[in-house]
Amino acid sequence: MNNKKPRIFLTNDDGIYSKGIYALWEAMNEIGEVTVLAPNTEKSAVGHSITISDPIRIEPCARHGDFKGYAVNGTPADCVKIAIGSFLDKEPNIIVSGINVGANVGANILYSGTVSAAAEGTMLGVPSIAFSLNTFKANNYELSKEVVVKMTKNVLDHGLPKGTLLNVNIPNCEISECNGYKATTQGNEYFLDDLEKREDPRGRIYYWMNGEIVNNDTSDEQDGYAIANNWISVTPIQYKLTDYKFLDKLKSWKLYNE
Amino acid sequence: MNNKKPRIFLTNDDGIYSKGIYALWEAMNEIGEVTVLAPNTEKSAVGHSITISDPIRIEPCARHGDFKGYAVNGTPADCVKIAIGSFLDKEPNIIVSGINVGANVGANILYSGTVSAAAEGTMLGVPSIAFSLNTFKANNYELSKEVVVKMTKNVLDHGLPKGTLLNVNIPNCEISECNGYKATTQGNEYFLDDLEKREDPRGRIYYWMNGEIVNNDTSDEQDGYAIANNWISVTPIQYKLTDYKFLDKLKSWKLYNE
Image (cartoon, rainbow over the protein chains, first blue to last red):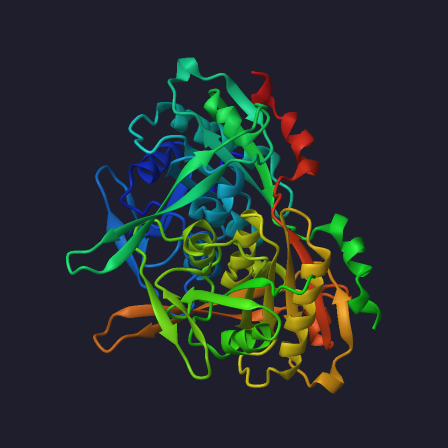
């Protein structure tokens, strides 16, 4: 890095009024020129959703301290598209998404708005990182702040391959309890779904999506297992989705030869 | 296949009142016992979004002919989770999603509710296919109906590897003009975004997300190029997202050795 401050773009999926993006903004402010565009409300589990059938509004937004940003009535991927495609005068040097309340590991990466913002950034050619904290009751961001600064500096120094983002999951522990960084693979953690049936005050049936986390992984080189064991998990993620192994077998199906 | 009719589950992202799911239902009815749960309104570009912060309602719904199904105020992935996890007495033999208005190829697979429904099915262990028709003004489903029957029968016969779905894109041409089936890879087609600025009647600024399709692929073994050349494109898709190639390089970063 040269002496000029890097341009850092922030977004998330918990919304611009969340604790996590505030902690991220505080940490990133120390090392760069920060711009924030984030959803105006919580958008958890929106995955790689984008807004194509509704108008989008972008409103300036301030919080305590000097926090200034823009609230968008869209998804995390929308925020990145808008920022890079139109809103920012200069392309950022890096896109940082988070800090999400709750881990994004295993199969659940697919549902994650936090990771999808980084995926969108990567697709647009900007090095991108997603940060998530392994708790649903986040109130201690001390370790997280250290991690976001160190990882952001590292990515600015090293760069990332075209099409690859870093998915960073942070254990919910004290700095002194943390074992350090671990390069991991996407593991197999998933939600076992349950649909809870209820009756509303007018006697009509409705449901809540619910579920419990299942994780049978046993190696701390897998994302979910690593954070459960107080490692900071860093997984390189890419979106080349073709199943090449099956492609040849598929070609042997009769329909190709008719 | 034995003589017993297979159980076929249908969903889509254009909604239960779309033409595409009706055509799909007509075709699938010929070969199996069909159940339909689909979004109650259009949910295009919702990606792998799921509904965890709102109650879900499931309403019976009928259309002309004998079409019966259930309209869900959720996403395509919700419909699959609900059907497999709770709603259906018996697990279906196959999940079929579509027929989407507009192709789902290249980078745009990530935004697709149609493909995400099939992805969700695959994650839940049921062989799944996504079908999309390469036009935004679909009115001729003759070729599509042939394709959905043939592909569904093939998947019922051959099965699919665990974790792999088939993403089928159908060219918008007459049966006589179609070149046949092609096993393809996910190509590089993407949307070049544009944000169109407008003023509402009260003088407030809003934006529409817009964009144009960019496709520089040149092989008819790539999904987008194949359908543009009147091939039926069949791509095996999987969601193991770790960038293994970069993983070793990542391990050399200093932060792992501190």
